[in-house]
Picture 1 (cartoon, rainbow, N blue to C red):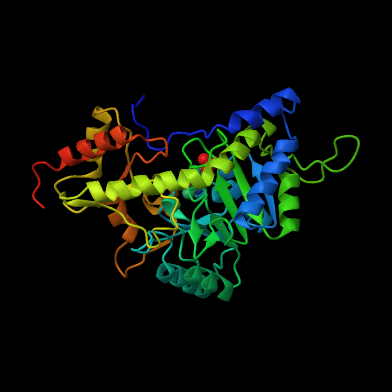
Picture 2: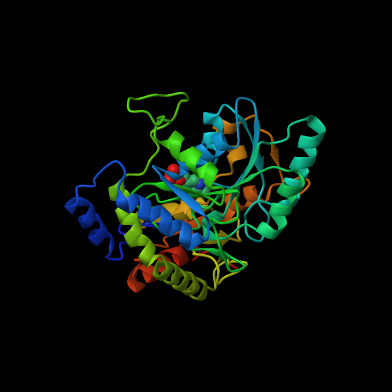
Length: 380
Ligand SMILES: *Cc1c(COP(=O)(O)O)cnc(C)c1O
């Protein structure tokens, strides 16, 4: 479906084409090339991680990380429950068993309470996970000071899924620098896009080199093609990396634009029985998407989505929790409260509104107008 206003469309800053032209001029079209190496170095420098590997997607980046941590058939992997399926599909690629951890009510990221419950279960039942995948959801950082010590206590490594959080900070440090391995996505709807792509980052350079080896079909350093292990075709191309280098130079500006849109949504969407979710650390989120939490049962997220679609505006309900997905039926999951899930409530009440950093004032006004119309006959 074509929309007039998209949720999070690509927005080029201008320098991307310069780097792409350079790739064409030097015929470094594929597979690797100088821009690929430079993009990895620049992202590592930006986040403060020692080493980076550019991949074909965020999902493939998570897959490589799981293999590095030795996840195999029937192993357990903990994962944030409220997320996009790209976070946890790679657990199935390894034939391992996902266990889903609910959100906490402040950041909507992984609940330390539910995580602790899950670890106690794992200890009692002999299901200690090989890794924990923690998401920085919608651009807002997880509460690393609460979550990391729990994982350390049980000696389990952390994969930080920062797919949605390029440019976000947690207490002054970049998202994508907290996990033992961190992952970005550069898919078309993410704040920094390479048209499609992803990245693995780590301070463990050996880990990154091993993942680099697997990402290019595990070719041994021989003159002929020699393979002792199996690999994947998971590498980013030099042309995509060229786009990424341009986008990275534009990233801080993009974050500032998205924050400004977030503040205007908050200021202008008043007097309706719904609110734009605020961030625990407002000056730290990249404000990837704005989330409208509906306080009345008279209007559902689907009502709002359909109303906006009729006005050619793209909108979506919040992620449907993984423990509610048919494909993950039967997986174990742990809730934040004793008898209810925070993320089920989020899913039942939340709509994602257009938040692209290329959005104009007129477009924002149009979205706000249409959202308000959804609540016209509803008392506060
Ligand atoms: C987009 C996304 C992914 C997957 O990234 P792709 O590049 O689309 O494979 C993983 N996790 C989260 C939280 C995402 O939003």
